[in-house]
Length: 229
Image 1 (tube, rainbow, N blue to C red):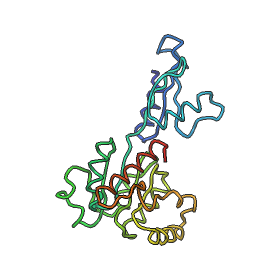
Image 2 (tube, rainbow, N blue to C red):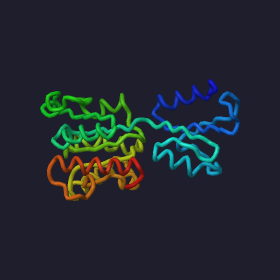
Image 3 (cartoon, rainbow, N blue to C red):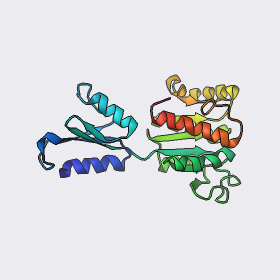
Image 4 (cartoon, rainbow, N blue to C red):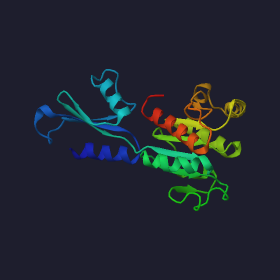
């Protein structure tokens, strides 16, 4: 791989931007100029012959060959940010980690956000805006707001919608969500963005217990990650 392309690849990966390196294998060498191209998600021309295949690979995350071209896919590791150190979150952490997510839990309520209740996860007992300023959300991040408290949930929900997180969900019934929508709309969030909020949160599987709700939420997260929602 040429140094310029390698530098660009490393730059994109450090910024958590999805890229694919396409190698034309008909040349028989890996060192010649022009045989490798780097594609950045969201910046591919409509005229690009590999457009459909590239977009499919960005969703699946799988590398492989298309004819004589090998596509090496580099996706940022998916993140799951959980707002609220509640019972549902305790079940979600282990499930999400087993599914390959980099999980963090944010809750300023220290009585809930304690290492004893969340021993094996990145835990922030701080207000969400304080954490998200230093660790901004992106399109390979899912955010689940579970506190039921607008003082804690609203700011990260708005941030997730503006950042284009691949999944944004919030706990609460119809009336709670209507009030939430009104608050976010008044703060400038568009109707198109608001329509992306998964509320009531999670797959409709009849979940009732915290563990079952955790499964339902993670199912929605994965479905959105894989383009199946």
